[in-house]
Length: 368
Image (cartoon, rainbow, N blue to C red; front, side, top):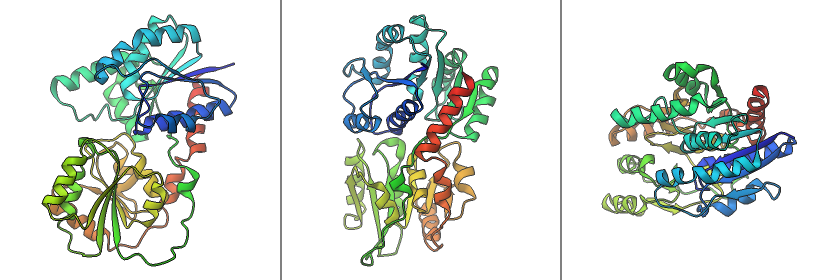
């Protein structure tokens, strides 16, 4: 039987864990012997993602949290190598950027070089935001990992092309896959509203981290004159206190809310007038696809490789070209005057759970 081991650092609120759970279930349903290795136990959504993977997927934890992420990752190499030597998988899949070099090293240390190694990119590498020595070191480390990989799976054709240009010596190993993001409830038609809503809502959705730059959205919202507009930022993270302080300082406490983590984002997208993603960088953000599944107009910075091809020329969507509050406020105000699109759901369907699993199965079986 074809054995597949998927490797994650931890079950956190990012999309990598959710995708790994969907893939594990999909591979098992296709008749493969699948297990999931999680390097660090105790992620903040661990149980939810364990349930998502299903009872039939063995999950092996390498241990509890051990300090900063970089050091924790390096410390996992011997334990992962021992597990891979015992497991002897046919294929190993690193499910995120941060585990690529560690998984490559562990496979070699385990003497499992015959096991096929696939690395998934989850944040931009070729177009990384890093500069100078840090950028060089990152590229150097990925170049080493790529030389030991049988395939590198990117999240868009745009990113595949970027990677082939940036790493010409391994250009043949890059391949696009569709991540399984979009669930049937996200694609379902919304229930008819029972009563008209008193406000139009602009959504921001994601972890409250510096990367997401939600302060850009708050500052732009403060300049919008329409009294019926409300801003909701759904998510949790270390930037909550700073964002709450900014909302208070701008006098927006009665118009801006931060409800925290919300389970049913599909309902929020169906009821929203618009979703805005002001991030510095992303891989292929799930929130964009989730918004599209609800035909929710979407604005995004040029923060992921497929941003312009996916949103730049799509009715109801736009790229945020200028990040200052005035320019963003004017763009939001203009987009709110446009009719709600009806075709975005078709784009999101490409990233449904069945289509995403099928895409990864094709990449796995073709190479094998």
